[in-house]
Length: 85
Image 1 (cartoon, one colour):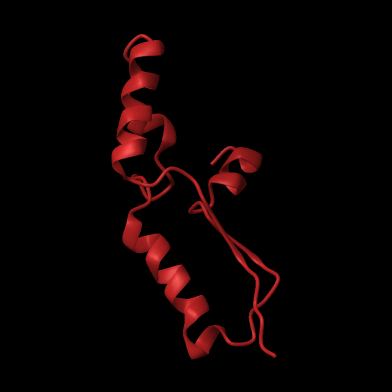
Image 2: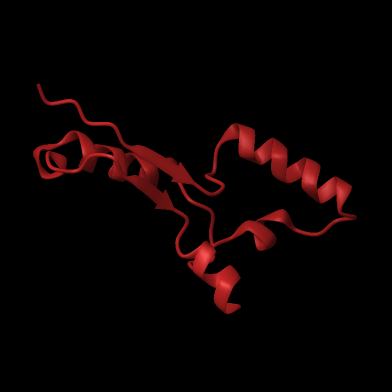
């Protein structure tokens, strides 16, 4: 039996829901551009296709031996928080 359990965790990804959250943040913060606050080191938010590529990797033969992992798709945001990047 080949059962694989993995998790894909992301920071903000450009979707209709994140757009609404960004607008609410901007209104509550007095006009601070939420895209600047939540952008990654690449200078943009994640895109659905970024997440899709990771999920595709897990679903294809290349991901056959990957199980029990958490793919964190944050473009080094966690590292930037630690190292001030």
